[in-house]
Length: 409
View 1: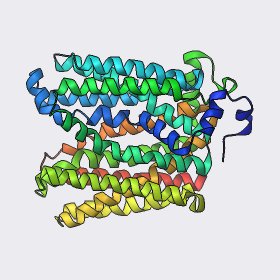
View 2: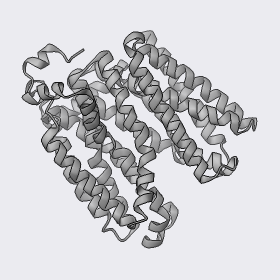
View 3: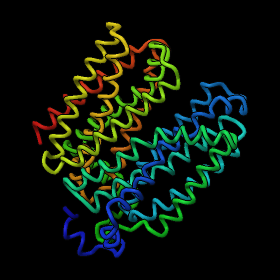
View 4: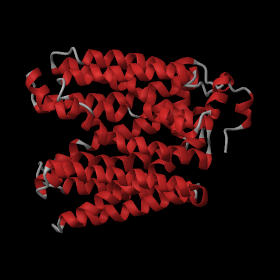
């Protein structure tokens, strides 16, 4: 289903051009904008030991650069989203890309961890523009089942990028040092800037933009938060993402330190689980027209709830790796069903505030991820109990909020 006819009447020429783009070209362009998060957070991970030596910093201090990037990605969406509702989709993305290129290059010039953390905060905030506007463009052009289907297609990038980013970073270390990785990020941002200057359409008509400056943006965001339907879906998304990030932050310690898995085998397991997310999202895209996004989300949340309980019981009972591994895989598969469909349902509620809605969804996700990451290691690096408890509690509460939301929908 296309966007509302009232929008199409006053649509800018770029909107017609966007609708004329093939589906896969549109997915590729928006997918490239969605890759900022994994590229910012994962591509330099193989270089952390070398960075610690080069910058004379501890591992804990270097983790601040990762935290700063996460905070930037979360807070930056709260800025870019309302701006895109007020000034259109193209300008925030183009400005964000310019700042991203400059900050990535600046990272390569840093000589201490504190300066690097500050620049990483700016880098994440700039990259957030592409993430939030990408979701808003989908909502500008499509609604209902078509929007859910396109969000599922974007899950291909979301699922594969975290696997490819550290692999690319590792290969780059054969020909350059950690500074070269950030130069590569700057070059990639410059290339994407050139593509967006030529191909990124403006999909938000002037007549549908919000005006009133910062005060107007705050009113829009406040209105979104007061809407119980939207707030409920956003909370569910954040809770499920907390479970997902608990797995991301804790699975390496659990599998390597508790179950004795080698780093190489862990990388393979992580990749297989991410592939499960991609496959599930594409199955969902295929059947969302018959089943509907609500039912697919219910199936995913129900499956994740069972998975979380079984995982926690298995960890507490020392049941072994052959119970834990299927639980990890199941969690990722169920997120492939939940993520795109909850996003489509939430974005459909306020079509004239797609940028602000996208910003709140993304910001709450990254905030939830940043909040649970330190909790995973509460019992040390040789215990999987905190991870199991966080996953189980997060999915159980998300299912409870979903039932409450469904009863009022």
